[in-house]
Image 1 (cartoon, rainbow, N blue to C red):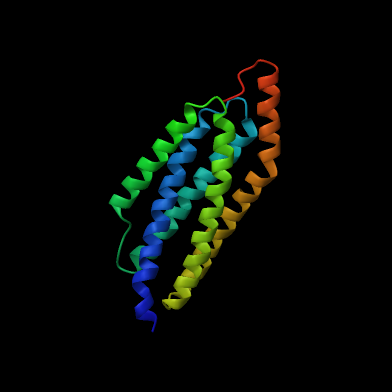
Image 2 (cartoon, rainbow, N blue to C red):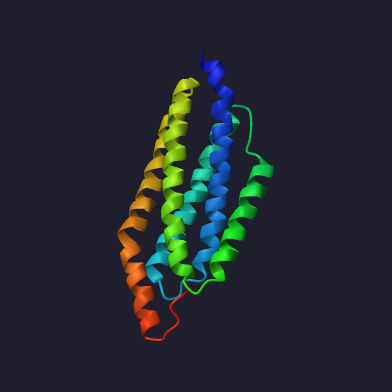
Length: 169
């Protein structure tokens, strides 16, 4: 039965790899624009590094299955990331939009890794569990950081704006 699940599992790994590529691009566009939000900048820089390692883990899993990521999916998700970043950059409340989008994106990644763990089990690729679970835990930590700091980011933005200072990024 495991062979019937293999293709679905591999597609999930390819999609997760593209998702990590998108995350790296989204966050990389944000970090250089967060001069008024040093804690957020530091958290995003840490998570970019984690996301790069997560992408490497996915590459290793795919190579172990005799395949690789999809350049086309990476290109498409990268394009989507850049369009979203440009859209947010045009808004005076860019930092708030990014904070909310990051919160949602982390939860999407959590769901992707939870699904991949199940697919790995179904496909008989139990050796992937540790790597996928590690990435899941990293995404959960970042989602928790987003949750814990949304209030502070919002307050900082509102305070700077009320004082007539540059509140965006």
